[in-house]
Length: 449
Image (cartoon, rainbow, N blue to C red; front, side):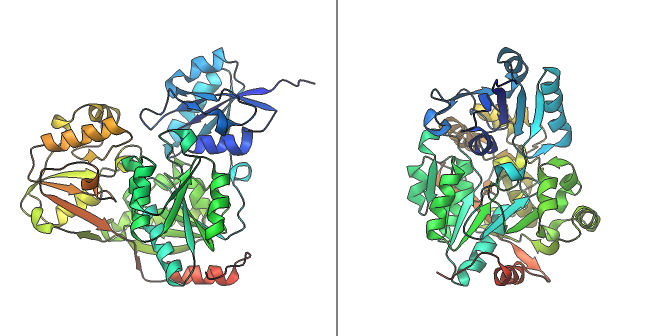
């Protein structure tokens, strides 16, 4: 009998990879995780998963390498299995990585929900999506507001974004704007946490999602899993809500693990109906029916509000959009662009000739972004480069299409128009109706307050 521990590499992007390690491998003496690899997010390789999080089997922690090193790592570290652990990847890209792994001699593994989902003592409503940028955040906020209006205490738990000091990010709780500064949040983190805070809701995040869940359960009647990218939840959902996007009709069946979240859904939200072509909506409905005919479908829109529309009409505008939506979300249009079109901008100024520092690399890595500026801010240098690029761009107005007040983070000299958006249901059934039905039939007791 061969008692040798199998050597594992976890292929990730500072999120799902750490969770898969914590739930499947941390205290498992049958396996030896020799490395993580990192992709998608800049500057997250070159670190270590710290020993205080890695557990007794890993007193020195675990190194994090760039994914480009994967073939050499497999050979040099005698790796048996590579576990793919990040999201919003086309099926073509997933199997490209699988081929690299197999060619180097290792097995290629996709870890599923049964091994990686944690059970809560509270009812869990999970919100996921088939792609980045579908509208998960406004859907989560809409659900939370509906539940809070009924008197329930709700805690949101956000999919991880641990880009800083991992040992300090084991469990993070955000209830005030000061908490964002306390935890030294990146722009990407603020985009997810700030809207919850501004609505009076508590949101948790971090690295150790078992510990996070137990803290959230102490103050909540209901847990909301606020998903990231198109990943499936870390917590076993009692109700699964998946958001879809007709702007990218067809992607719901061709991106990993977006199709998984669609097939898991109890409720499917078709968002952005107000700005989508009828034929794209029809294709999306057909695909939903094909893979999940039992799901309840809610039609919705994301209508825009703009605080200073007079700064847009007839002006040459620079549009700043949510970073991940433009990069690995592959969106060519966002809320800022729609606002510019709606309120009559005379020209959309291309920021690429004015880009400086790390933003130039972003445009090189994602050449299909087009004449939009992604609000990249994974570190102080990127934030500084974003500020310098905006300042240098020859425009009349800056349209901010991100979910946060970007002027709190970077100094913008040009006039600013901020875009807001919330979920608006169209027809019936509504999410509120379906939530009431869920709570009335929930297996776990749901008490108010």
